[in-house]
Amino acid sequence: MNDIVWIIVEAVAKVLFLVLILQLTAAATVYLERKISAFIQIRVGPNRVGPWGTLQPFADVLKLFLKEDIVPKAADKFFHSLAPIISLGIALAVWAVIPFGDYFMIGDRKIMLGVAPDVNIGVLYVLAMTSLGVYGITLAGWSSNSKYSLLGGLRSSAQMISYELSMGLSLLAVVMMASSFSLNDIVAIQEGWGGWKWNIFLQPVGFFIFLTAAFAETNRAPFDLPEAEPELVGGFNTEYSGMKFGMFFLAEYANVATSSALISLIYLGGWALPFSPEAIGMQEGSILFALLQTLVFVLKVIFMIFFFVWVRWSIPRFRYDQLMYLGWKVLLPLSLLNALVTAAVIVFAI
Image (cartoon, rainbow, N blue to C red; front, side):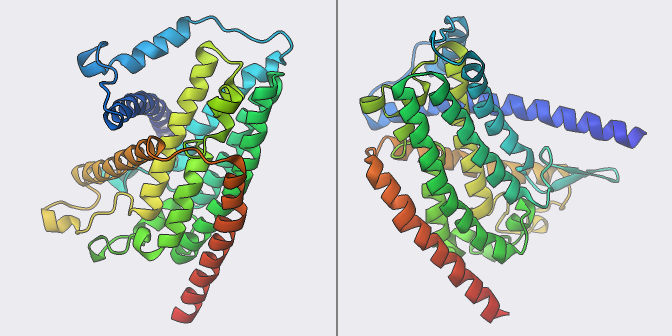
């Protein structure tokens, strides 16, 4: 009975802590985006609310909470309210299987760093949940009863279907190399060789495809066609205000953090260090070494978030026909070829 109570308490504590961290991460990402974009465009950026403008994201959230929630008269009110909940819920749910480090021991109890990080179908879970995220955007576009919103929702559906196929096939090559769908196992095969076993070196084509698909999946520039302001006045979220709009905003930045974490785990070695714990006087399974692993993983995630922001403010938006052409006629054949070549190399190497 005590074991069951411990498991429940541990799971609840991990979930609450993760939700809090994700919300703070989204706020920090908003601040970083505004500061980095200001630096790129030779501007100042937020600098009034708090030291160096650090409290500006929290002021924005407060403003959204206080804004009036306006629902169009002809909109489907139930689905109009459900759509942002789906988008944010899916964005948070993906983090259930993402590990932050290996493990540490408390007595004879093994503590994993994450909510459920040792799931043996982690990759399948991530692909399943990210594919559900499109329902939030599509429902938002349809339920608003607005042509601009509907076009944004339809664009998002077509875009996600196109790029999810390439994303899944790029991951297939990594899964074949690890012989496992577990994210822990994928990180484990990248340990050693001073970092040269990272999949970014062994699977450069797969990395490029996954990175491109991640930009499309998160609706980030240059793939932000579902919310293109020049032609769709904001796209799928045109008819949203207040905290409902804020939930879409939060979901987008949570998805950026999710994509950054997955890229770090699958292609950048995750928490893997280029040396053994004994080389620096630490012991595997110790709390100190687990904290070091988590720090390494977090730094890689921060770097990838910076890269997402950098690309947004550096590359112009594609036309929609270019976006679909790239997804179906370039990335999909390339990902198929990459999977076939990887399978052939594994077969003949064995």
